[in-house]
Length: 177
Image 1: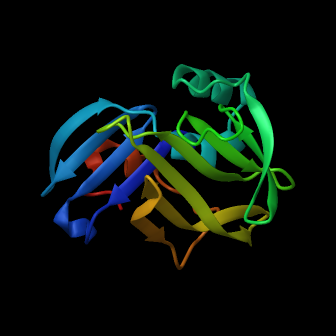
Image 2: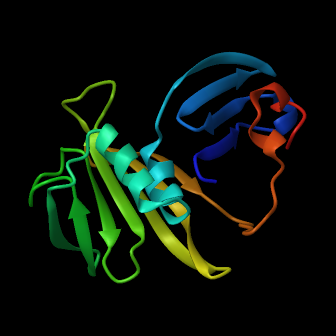
């Protein structure tokens, strides 16, 4: 961290997954690299990197991804006071993110869907758990136009684990787990 995420799909021995490293995603299928392209994952930036890098770096990335940092307002969501950054009140389509006002934790992100910009995608971090002096969301929901299309539920969460740099090296995807 920051800027690194590894996703293994299925058993690691199957060799399927993705590496997101410093704005680039590399895919793997059956142990072979299936493609590389630029990709800034805003959930990674706002849900994780923001807590481990200089504010100026986060601001640079967020602005480059088209979020309007001059638009900020307050809302109440699920009984919590939140800051909404990137959109006017009532706008749930523009690129925006929501932050818990009291703990400053990332809660949700809205953006036009890449495959069909008329539709909105919402990503929600839920079930925050206090761990090792910080907070970890144990559930992530992805919705398109209000309908849940994908969820991630995490268990056996470990924090402060030392990871070898090889974990995020595309050349070592099959051997470093």
